[in-house]
Amino acid sequence: MSKQFINDKNLQQLAVHAAIPGYDRSQVAPGIVHLGLGAFHRAHQAAYTEAVLASGDLRWGIVGVSLRQADTRNALAPQDQLYTLAIRSEQEERLQLIGALVKSLLAPEDPAAVLAAMADPRCHIVSLTVTEKGYCHDPASRALLLDHPDIVHDLARPDSPRSALGFIVHALALRKQADIAPFTVLSCDNLPSNGDTTRGLVLAFAEKVDISLAVWIAEKGAFPNAMVDRIVPKTTDTDREHIASVLGAEDAWPVMTEAFTQWVIEDKFAGPRPAWERVGVTIVSDAQPYEHAKLRMLNGSHSSLAYLGILMGYATVDQTMQDVYLPQFISGMMAQEIAPTLSRPGLDAYRTELLQRFRNPALKHQLHQIAMDGSQKMPQRLLGTIRARLAAGLGIERLCFAVAGWLRYLAGATDAGAAYELSDPLAVTLKTAATAPSDRVQALLNITAVFGSDLPADRRFVESIGRHYRRISELGTATALQQLSAELAELAGMEAEHAR
Image 1 (tube, one colour):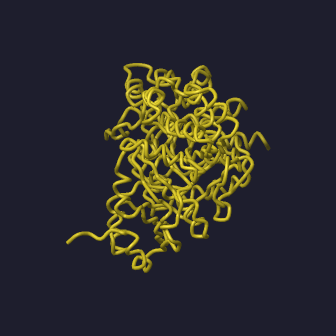
Image 2 (tube, helix red, strand yellow):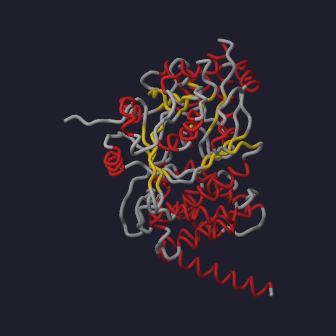
Image 3 (tube, helix red, strand yellow):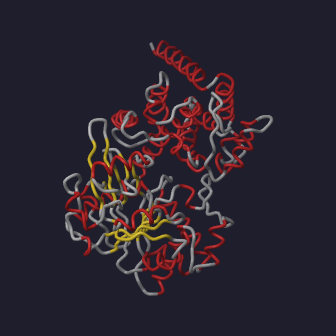
């Protein structure tokens, strides 16, 4: 007996179990091309856009593009691009079928189709969730890596790009040739000033193609900065089985997420855009305060929990929040070392909200998922905060403990000796340094793509990292964390006594 999958034909019968699109999907125009068709986009930007379509504005269907693997396209195409969004809390689960995706393309299979979709006059926005490593840049300096294999290929082969930057620039060139206004490039990745960063990389690439193209993009294009926030764990086979049992139909790739969601975008667009502000998006003149708070408070804390938690033998974020010392450590780091570097209003409430989200047992957010690509994430998640604290002459002990945890994680085994594989663009370089016969800390700090040249030259930073690294390596993460907690408590007591 063949399996029944969700599709347009059985939407009405699925409405008994889930919210379904209430608009005519056949009338939706492809107004957005999204590069990086992963779970986060489908739980976040596509969900907001679904609400816009439901309001009656059908100009904003999404053409999703997978830049590497066929798995998402292969899962969604037989389902008429429909998928289930499962919103989970400790108390309940709500299901919604998302219909905003009108087509899914696989870039390596048909790059011309991707370029055509981006050059279509109906396309006004090209958005991205390609992860930090997808920008082919040096995370420390934010410069384009002209020797990156994908960039070298894309400059030579404008008809068949591989990278997001290659597709953007060559599609913009097609629009310029056809006298079509440029689309807005909307980065939704966790990069510092992601719009400004993307603009700089696009212009650097375009200058190598045609200087007049770079000038046209600079004058007429738009790259708004944006902040995105929603926790989206990796979908498991258990999730698929559960969704099928509820719907009575298979979904090859449902997406799990939390109830919380936030999207802040600068109001800087090159042309029309969806009325996202009517469905919960915050449109602002300056996204930086929100972006810094999210990168440093949420992402910095997530990475810290991931590396320290893995070393201690935990598997998910909610498990780390049941530890004796980790919740106190993370709360203290956010309140005392991260928050003073930020200007977003309501930081105390934001911290409380984050700690509650981390405790959500329904998500089962895997630590190894968060730990991936640390070399690309550390500069903006933790090192930027450390630089701000150093410049102000403020303490950095918790932040450095978290960074030392990452350095110890790079050795590839937990405190109990359980091995795991590193998933990182610099995996070979990192593991070689992390297992060097002597002075591993210095070998790691000498990786300028991560630490730049300033931090390895800062005595306070180097000494703090070295001290915490030795403790974690010699005593184990739990004991080292216990000692740090005791020292910080004693220091706080001394400061309070001095203040009196």
